[in-house]
Image (cartoon, rainbow, N blue to C red; front, top):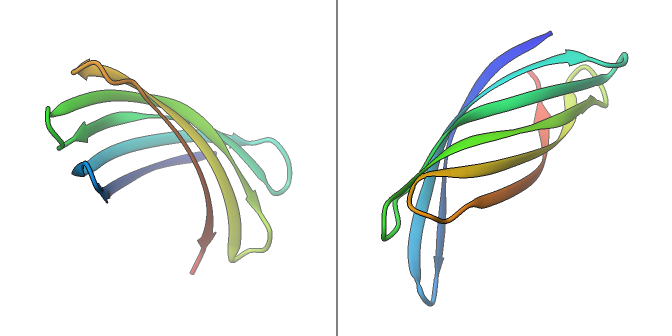
Length: 99
């Protein structure tokens, strides 16, 4: 079983301006194989651009352990607007190094 949390801040900049997005996510999941973890994720996000927006986040992912020290992750999150009207979808791929 997995129970965990993540806090992140991301920044975007470009020709039309810049913004940052902060999110706090909780995760819970189960092993579906010797090296494979399936999990659900939910949390809260804040877009600090103009106008300020807040979102309720929901999604899930899959994590696969290559070795005891390295795993790969794919995650999808959908942001349901709490304030503002800009829904967001996020797909992330990552590698974790466990110490």
